[in-house]
Length: 161
Figure 1: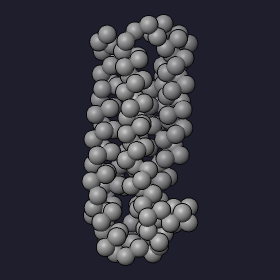
Figure 2: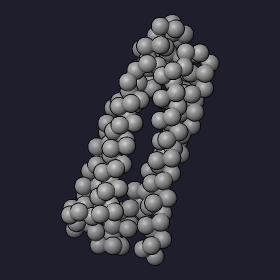
Figure 3: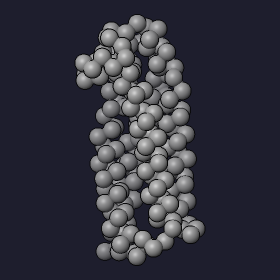
Figure 4: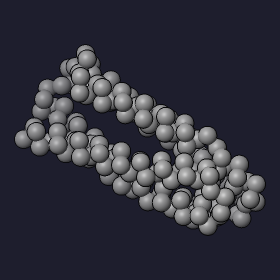
């Protein structure tokens, strides 16, 4: 049964990372896009991955916690370090991504963000969208996510402590 739970944990992690990959590619493509309709489409693609990402996160956390108990790992430092790393990455991602995408969506006139009139009153000018689209936020997010993933994989596979 332990092997099955670990498999669920890995599948949840894969789903989580794959959904983030969709958002990451869309965000990076957004930097080079100046057509408002295409920007909206890229933002929609990015948002579509978020729901799948949360499902993957739920599965990886639930299965990881169960596997931690089944494998008697909670007394080891590596599992706590992996969990702390995941929480730190999530906090940084949320702190950077939420305001960035909120402003971008509001500027593009998309859904609830436009209704909030977060920073811009839609429709924003082309200069507003250009400023947001050329932000370094996608690279910050990608760097934090990739480095966090490397650390977590290292901790889980090598169990250094």
